[in-house]
Image (cartoon, rainbow, N blue to C red; front, side):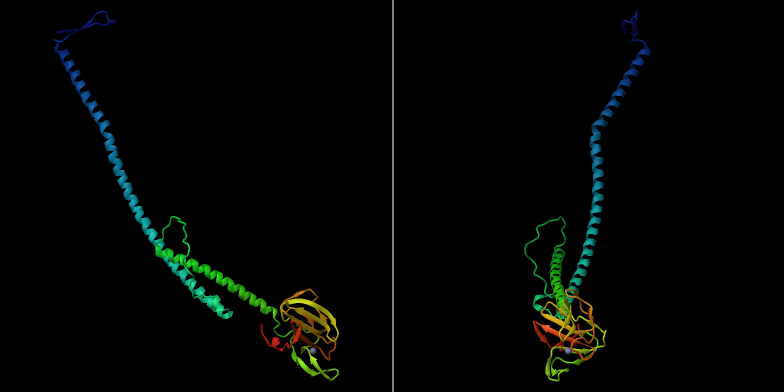
Length: 309
Ligand SMILES: [Zn+2]
């Protein structure tokens, strides 16, 4: 058998003689190559078809590992959270102890201030309940801890209100006490008391409207309470005199001064020097004539000068 290949470019057709042994071997080799190529292609094709499955498998393995890691992390977080809650519980305990101490302090203050017990119930925990706080901030504390914290917060609120009220009451009391004549206006000894006594000039019975405190000329005379100077000048019989209105019904008068140190309208505090002792007016020697008036009536100053602030 012969195969004749005719080509346009070549003038002479190429002739293959199949009877030729060499050509037969070459054709066989070509066929073998073709088969081998087909097998290789099939294998590659198989690889392409199978690989998504393999990829999915490896992906699943990777995800497995990831989940495992996350699980470990979660366990860590859980442990941390527990530690935080434990720390929180300890802190809560400390705050509760502080609250108890505050209560004790409040009670003691109430007693010291001689305030009405009914108004300040530091040992009584405030009413708990009412409208629930609907806000949900995403944190969920163990219910017991949450309730304790809420109770404590309420307790602190109530304590704050009570302590503020207590403070203002005590401050008022202090201001009040600063407005009340207390103590001696000058260092010296009482030479004449309030009330009936023989007039040192005429010898007739007269009513002494104040206390006489013997003190050398120039001795500083001090305001016995906070107030405003309403008079500074001469008055018949009193000589150079200072008068202070304390705004709560009390007025004090310091007479026979040698020198005045304040002027009308001036505010004075407890212990401020208002004048210097002397013997102006109807006086037999250097002293301070001290009067206390309450709601327009002259009163015995003795109780006031004997008091201490
Ligand atoms: Zn007098």
